[in-house]
Amino acid sequence: MDSSDQVHDNEEVMALIQEGQPLSDILKELISLRRWKEKRIQAEKQETHRMERMLTRLCENCKDTAARWIRHQNGSTDDLPIELLHTILRFTLPPSTLLDPTPSRGAQSLWIRALMIKKGLSQVSKRWHSVLLPFLYEEVAFRHATQVRAFAASLRGNADLTSLVRRIVVDCPVISEIRDVVIGDLAYILTRCTRLRVLVFTDNLFVMEDGDLRSVALYPFPSTLAAAVETLSGTLRRFEQWPQGGGHHFTFPIRCITSCQQLTSLAINIDHPASLEPISFPSLEELDLSQEYDVRRAEHSGRFTTWELPLIKRLILPMATNIQGEVLLKYGRTIDYLEFRDHLDMAPHLHPESSRHPYIDFLHLCPKLRHLVFQVKTSHLSDFQLLNRFQAHRTLAYIDIWVASPAGALRSQFLALRQARKLAPGVPWKNIRLLDRALNYIHTRRLPQLFPPDTPEDELPCTHTILGLAIVHAPWGVYRSDLDVLYPEDSDSEEASDSEDSDEDSEESSVDGTFSPATTPSDDTVTESEDADGMDIDPGLV
Image (tube, rainbow, N blue to C red):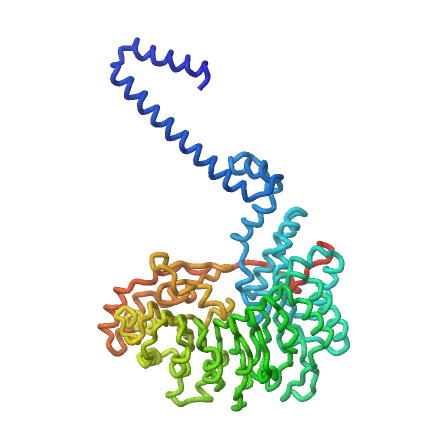
């Protein structure tokens, strides 16, 4: 406090004394003023410490600008350092990396809508364009041959873009007249994207024009493209090969990626010729064999049993193909996550007998298993009674069940059984959940991990909104929020009252209280151009 302020305070104290104020009242006011001043000084110290801690994360040139914004002084977004803008955009932009571009097509798919939001923001100004570039190009999906050529031209015109790409999905058919050109551009893209982490191929790139619509002929994997994939050995972390149906799939030269030192996840068709060869992936932690469409073939014996996967922890297996026992006998001792998927619901048709349940029959081969995920044949409550057939397991803690729709009486009865702990009394897991198969716009492979079952119950239920579509994460399951609107809790109880044991189920369901009605999802009014189905970024902008 300077001398002028001290003189002014002394004058105010003398004025109070001359007015006849009791000395005790004056002392009380002084004491309260002193306490207020001490609290204010303490708050200022905490704010200064918080600001210094935030500024330590920035470069020296950005600290002055950031300090003015933290102190709530005037400024524009152009003054903000790029690190702060990137942090803000990470929290506000739709998480396209969680959306799957392959299940659905068209301008209204969530992945395309997320891309168009990023593209619209990048056109606000030159400054915003430079800030949005990492978000625009972090994930690239090719659905048309013209997109491959346009993206290759963008990379040739701006070499700085090559370090921004993290994931590439190749899902475009190519006619024979321009096939060599497109393959050359794609090889150029792969060799230039030096920080690529995820690479996905579907059969579309290799489909051969054939007049006989009853058969599908495929081109062989080009050697130039195989050589380009080999250049990713230092950065590639996940490789995916997804068949599109039919009896034949393109044969990817699997040895192109055996040298990838950071490869931790691999998704490949189950009838790949390399599955019978001795191959080693020393860093692989996840193997996904679930995308199998040629289920007519009964002989898959010995596949993947000659591979060496010393670090494997997660397995995703098909329900319709009889390889589960051999694969789990080979790798079941080390895995802690096991999932059985049936994408086309073929298992009930190929194996109608009710006694075949691989998620029960082979559980003893996985002594370290903690998280089990499987898909039931139908959505009837009787399917959940299969849980009572599980034998006691020492480490199994969580079970997730894929169902067509966890709504109506199914949900009420499941909640009642879950609340009463009537499911699988011999297994000491902490949680049993339902997963909504309608959430196919999310990476369904990652859904059980994106919404982990070990989330504390005091943090649930919670709603996650992506482009107007809300996902509810409750202790008992993960599902679309519109189910709470279409099937509220009261109607669930009414439907359950017409079924067997309705009185008991209704009482226990009301006690559980693990879900709350969500708001109706709002319609997203994103407008898009006719060529919005892909990465048609104007080369002139970059």
